[in-house]
Length: 261
Image (cartoon, rainbow, N blue to C red; front, side, top):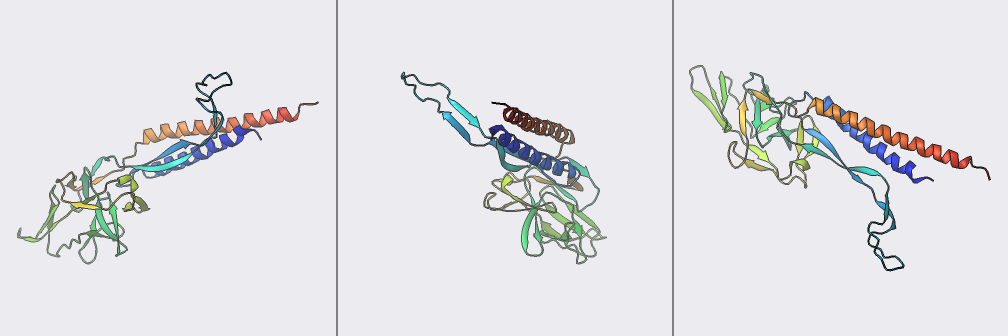
């Protein structure tokens, strides 16, 4: 069987996954705190007919050799944690991280998870939670008589009553990882740590390389719709080129089969 048929098929498979990733990025263009995914591809093994550096019968060294590649495959789909733009919401419990760091929440009441989505609210018990009801860690409880909440850049949350008396203060911390790209995406704008990401390191906002907190803002997706559209066009053309390779290989086989003795 002609080799190019299978080689072109691997190219179509990788470009299909490329389009899948682009579609996911575009679907989350307006998702708060979403981080862009980027596929990485690598070439497959090579069939070596003559190895570079081999010697001829006359004793000469072959400079390049003959190696024919067998296609491509997906090596990884990597998250890009570039800073997104900030959106002013006017909500006193909304927070955006300017720089490095994640908020930590308790998922399902037991599992620690991390997020860049700072859209927080109060639950029925007065605790600060995300949109799924997961409590911000460490837990922050706002008293019923609080009428104003302020959060400074260093993460100090203060709530005051009608008389201006501070009724509660809490220090909000951020968390960093050695390899952010190694975090596992679990949906709902959440990540969990893995062996690849390393353990979470806790720190005070604005210190030791941690970002600062902006109250009343949320971080938008870091997706560039124009860039994703360009990548989609390039992926479509690459897919089309691989399909034409399969068609050409099929026509060559047909011509070979039609040769009469």
